[in-house]
Amino acid sequence: MPEITVHSVEAEDLPDVLALHARAFGPGRFARTAYRIREGTPAISRFCLLSEVGDELVAHLRFTEVTVGGKPGVLLLGPLAVETRYRGLGYAQRLVEVGLENARKAGIALVLLVGDEPYYGRFGFKRISPGRIRLPGPADPARWLAAELREGALAEYEGTVEAAVAEA
Ligand SMILES: CC(C)(COP(=O)(O)OP(=O)(O)OC[C@H]1O[C@@H](n2cnc3c(N)ncnc32)[C@H](O)[C@@H]1OP(=O)(O)O)[C@@H](O)C(=O)NCCC(=O)NCCS
Image (cartoon, rainbow, N blue to C red):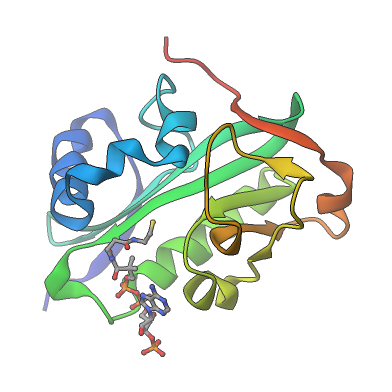
């Protein structure tokens, strides 16, 4: 069996990443609020990761650098996608764990996402109290989650989430 490797994402990986997203999420994905924040940001940040088996892309995790109320030090996690036949093998978990560790080492205080609490809870994500940290569009409050990478970080942030870096 070829070994599974985890790498940063490079520009040459993007066609395969987009094809994976199309298979994993379908056409409705562009309408989601999280996509609206990512729109107009570089497709790759220094925190994005992928997994390969041999040279086949099997999983991808994007992180977008954002601000909350204009304050930096925050990432928006997602999308996270694994090829169907490789699901349930821990590949997503590995990417999230490596991604959060890299973010912590880089001094990121807070990671936000819109997703399933039953899945992301295992990494320390919890629901955000309504009103404090706001998305620029509608999202189910039960799916609006945060993980503190620095203790007490949540209390330091208030306001609307915006992309930190615009596309060059
Ligand atoms: C969600 C997804 C990324 C998980 O990838 P994966 O590699 O199968 O995940 P892992 O192997 O690390 O973890 C599997 C575990 O998570 C659980 N799990 C997966 N999706 C879940 C969800 N939505 N809610 C709760 N638990 C979930 C599995 O039941 C399994 O549990 P177990 O460890 O108790 O057996 C993958 O199913 C996928 O690409 N789905 C389509 C895209 C998507 O919905 N992405 C997430 C939103 S951005």
